[in-house]
Image (cartoon, rainbow, N blue to C red; front, side):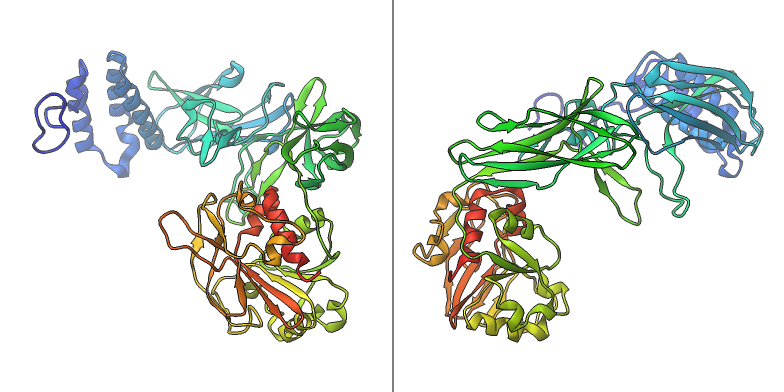
Length: 555
């Protein structure tokens, strides 16, 4: 819809001047730029530096304007490239604690014979300048060594979009000027100042640790770290309403002789004792665990528990998370140390559960939080004698896709079910599956999934033991799920399977294969495509109650 002006006939910029003519005095700059483009020879880039400096001086004489500022920055980078001017600052470490001093080695080299003087190094964050002119010689590195203190109040490094807790699907950013940047501003920014033909050229950079000697192409950024990292031994802690349970925090020292107090924080309604505990860690890497008693409120509730330390009047609450890939520099995240406390009415039956790990999940830890004793199993463990000691077996996500030691032992597992055992199999994909692997009954997978974690769930068999024993499951137990309902739902199954639930993304056909339970001989076989591997580590109460029912079947 045209609101004002004439309707464009060719493009949106009809009658809009996008040339240098819109800047007073810009026409002369435009002519000089056009002439230089025509004359430019990439084989003799240094030979064009003088002409580029003339254009730069003309730009400096123009009135202040965003376009002029932007073009001058671009021209400076062109001059830098034509000179073959290279700068680098190596820090003596990759990680620094606030208040520490970092040794820096600044190196500059020019590849051309154009006269260049290195006049200063500036540290904008510290308002500090080192003035000493050095005439650069072609291909001869010039070096300055210095040290710089990271201010004591510098916060530990964390991607700017993760510093503040966001909302569902959105990040929260305190400083809007950072939005769109691929990474944080540097910890120690550096400005290299040069004199070229009487003009001052500034190149910005940052202090970084030396490159990995084995993987030379990979180089970390200098990062600020907390003097102590904190970690909850259990990311989720289950409570009976009104009950007290121990919660343990592990501290790891980054520097020697670190001392202070550690405390556990909980919201109103939850109590923590003691209020704080003193600690002293003698050496880097030293660890110590501290246990607090947390008491839940008398009603069902969930809470975020936080851990922090106070050292010399400063508070730190960072957990250390390393992101390691062979083709990337080490990535460091330092989110607040958090655990989820869940007070809920939960009953279990049976005590001993075997777990067949698949592609990797945290379900065994969740089972232990429920009160089960969990034993990790291999295919060779699926014998009548070993299985006879268990109340149930849970199969990890994608186990049949990634493990080669299961197929030959499945007859023994299914025979155990037939004799009265209970097996709960979590989702698999179609990759490499063979007939008869997933279940002792006919079962076929699709690629269907329910991606909306808020998608409605319909209970189809309200009186089935899966939904009644030992915990009565209602639609409220499907509130608060995260990321998705389930994935790779079965689309065909033996009629002996009971269909327990139906769910779908908005506007799509309901899927009924998310939770299937069948009597097989004297036992039960359950196949479930619900995303337990997401819900249980997040402390979703209803997911715990329903999963406890699955493991308790037949008890």
